Length: 370
Image 1 (tube, one colour):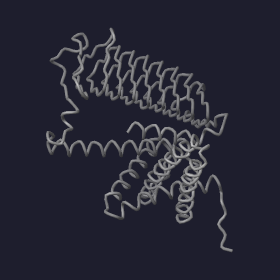
Image 2 (tube, helix red, strand yellow):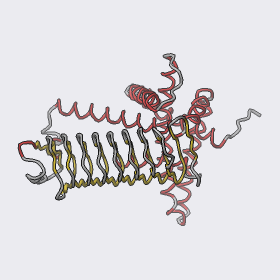
Image 3 (cartoon, one colour):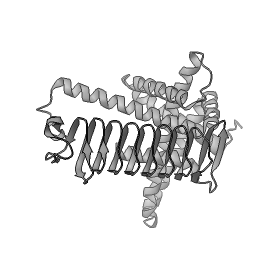
Image 4 (cartoon, one colour):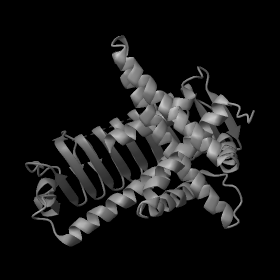
């Protein structure tokens, strides 16, 4: 899951890496920005949407922030909710609403007024959380007060001198149970769950197994929907044009997607054969995986867009509407994937169509009958 998340973040940032100067659209009280280095410093804005390699918030906003990139830094207060995904995510200014973070290294050193939801390899919390907290990571370090309930899943758990949980703690661990000091939470408010025991085939209940499968499917659908909505929000007009292209020329798009992936895989194999290019080949294979994921996310959104059109709705123009469209598309593709044989073929075909439409829009090849 974590590798998939990293690939998704790279896919979101890939179209922006070619531009040294960010492209910014200020529409109403909202700001949309994409580029290699994106610095958001326009005062008086409500919501911000930004993607790039390095994304930095340097001025306070009254609304919500939706950020993705390799390195994401929030140095100014957020008046509503924060959504941030990246390899390194640092929150050093107050968040009035909830903070939703995903990535590799996550650090929160400023108060969170709502709930905190974080998933990453390393998570460090050094500021109070007014609401509840849902934390899942390899190494989780707590050094602040969490006023609400906490669900915590970690391989390694560390507590600082300021750590305290005022609500109930559900602790999920792999291996030996983590020692929770009484100063953090009394044992009467702690429930422990050993992941390694619960997941053994001979000891899990049928209901628990079904529940885990359903929960995994729901989380996968939500993850795909959110990522697709972020892609759509980063370049809404281009994605609309890309959708028109895919609907008008589906077979050309399928062919272009197949050729794009084939060229990347073939180039990687040729580099391996040259021996000298062995060091470069993994980059091409990684790019192949990233583009495949990007094609799937495009297919998710375009499928939802098709359903949206069929029910007679106007084109989505807010992040919430795009998120609804993306979730509908993710659900539709999941249902298609459940169809034996047809679904197994349809999903990669739709992903290739999405990637092919992107290739046609960017490369603009000509197809001639003569």
